[in-house]
Image (cartoon, rainbow, N blue to C red; front, side):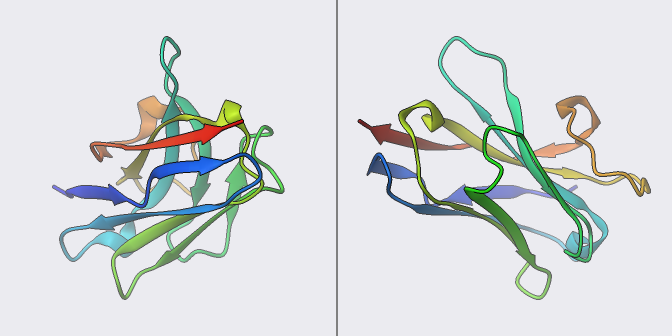
Amino acid sequence: QAQLVESGGGLVQAGGSLRLSCAASGRTFSRYIMGWFRQAPGKERGFVAAISRSGDSTIYADSVKGRFTISRDNAKNTVYLQMNSLKPEDTAVYFCAADRSDTLHLPSSRNLYDYWGQGTQVTVSS
């Protein structure tokens, strides 16, 4: 079972940038599709981005497309989320997740992910 630990969250002004990291334990990281989700107070956890096992394919939520970039380094067992041009509405707890299935499709549904990190808070001030 993979253990995921997020880091890199914090307080930033609107228009600023942050890079989140998610480090995974174990030797099977390269077999997982990885995703980022976020949850604002009073809202459901929603999809942000996902990346294929090799890193050559990505998908994004419309709300972050062009501003956020997901990437991974399989040698370091780490997935990243570079967040630029941050807006107050990006404020949320950000979670990374791993899909251990054999699917070739990048899932955006949180129900299809098997392992989750504990989350890291991102706060964007106006």
